[in-house]
Length: 171
Image (cartoon, rainbow, N blue to C red; front, side):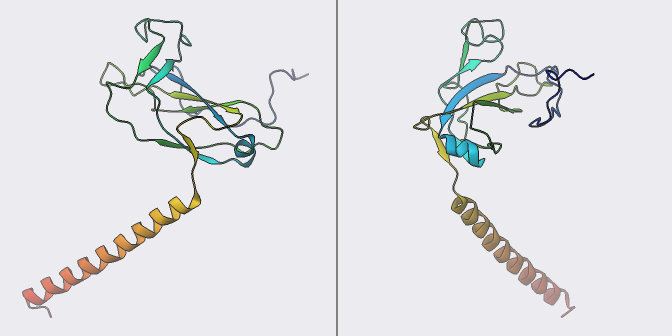
């Protein structure tokens, strides 16, 4: 007989990377978003705060964070806001944690990848500072601009090719 406490018929996903691989320190970040965003599975744009909790100690202080309990991003290169898509929830929205590989702190060792960012998303009003819902118009504008650039590049390359053929005597 199968133990019901260990089987999850609605698993959200599977781990595709080994969590025990040596890497940089992991970070924890908590954000609040409206429950409707969680229910809809919205895509969020999240700005980086100045300080993030150390995932290993939860803010208590450990060797990974130099006993400070957190990491400061002020001395680091500027990080662009990141996008994350929330999993759609049919039941009343509750807190969820999303693991974002390679968004943690860089490793002290060159051959190790950066740590992970564990983003805890909680339902509530208003959304946390620095958190916004990504609009579909943003992606449409980016796609349109990319298409225009691609068309102009194709025209330029075609004209260049025809000019080279003309100069070489083939046309």
